[in-house]
Image (cartoon, rainbow, N blue to C red):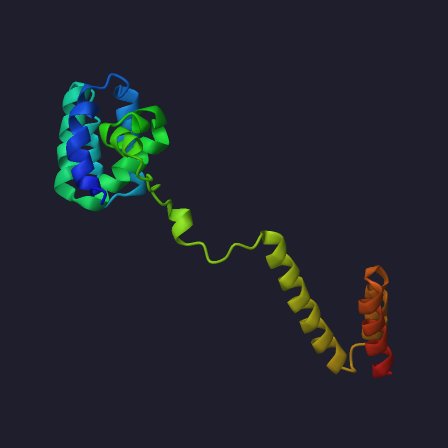
Length: 179
């Protein structure tokens, strides 16, 4: 069974503190990601504290990691997501990732927010075609019932010109029925 993100961050903290690839710019990106996307994890006040350039990067990072561990599992998960997004080479060289890769266990990818809320797997073209059919049926129903609108049958006849043979036959039959 895999460890929680909180346990993984405890294990990876030493590596992250010593890794030279986590420079000031990258730490700032991680802090901004956590602050802007997840303000419940890192408030504006906390973000400005961890972005203070008068404090060395290694100290700011150590304080950030301990703060995230105090916040809990969700904060640690979002930190790993931010590291994966902004520093993929660092993410895949973390000790917990290397151990999971070497053990042969499948590494479960962190689900993105887009993946969580997918309603269906149809393309936008499918949606547009269904919507067009619904609008066409509504227009047929609306204009077919009213006899006050002049030329509605001729408009349907003209609309049938660019359609397939079966649809054209139905529209022409419908316009002839109205007369």
